[in-house]
Length: 223
Image 1 (tube, rainbow, N blue to C red):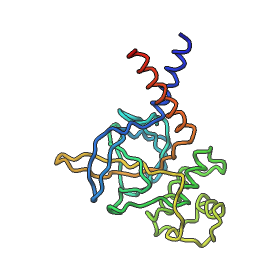
Image 2 (cartoon, rainbow, N blue to C red):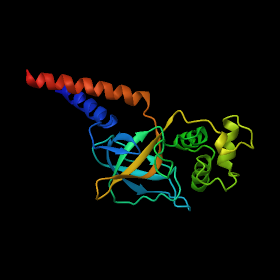
Image 3 (cartoon, one colour):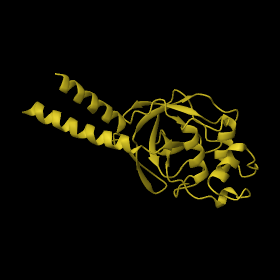
Image 4 (cartoon, one colour):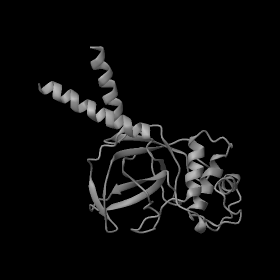
């Protein structure tokens, strides 16, 4: 009995850790996307500019990401609370008028987000983080990036202090959570893009264990 209880817990955790790939398939900008589920945005600790961090809550289908905090990648692309959005996880942002090619995140955004997720050891304010991300993503290129967060990122990544956003490298460890809304005519519009952490190896392993356990339990139930 105890063994069954342990297996059930492992299977449940693995299912929560693994995205359910079945979802709505749609086309946009000549590309085909598959929604990983539906979620809502919950504002928490919002910066004075109307940016992040935001908290997300899964409505249905999708990984257990309740409590995960995100930062806006785009400017002037509004999201609403208590509204379900379809979402995809990609290596590029699709909201904000960048077109079908998408806009990959910069390594500065990657650094800022990773440091912030690790407890924000340098004590950046929400405004600093959000404005530095927007500047790094060339959403506010007319604003000189003189915030501590921006300068800290350049130093940590070995850039010259005079480096401009357009000369930054690309992110390797931060995904983009793209939000989409279905229009009445059946078309789909990208609403906003947010930073999202790449699943850790432990989560991937756990998902694999859970899948195997679920299969084993199903086979036992059919015997």
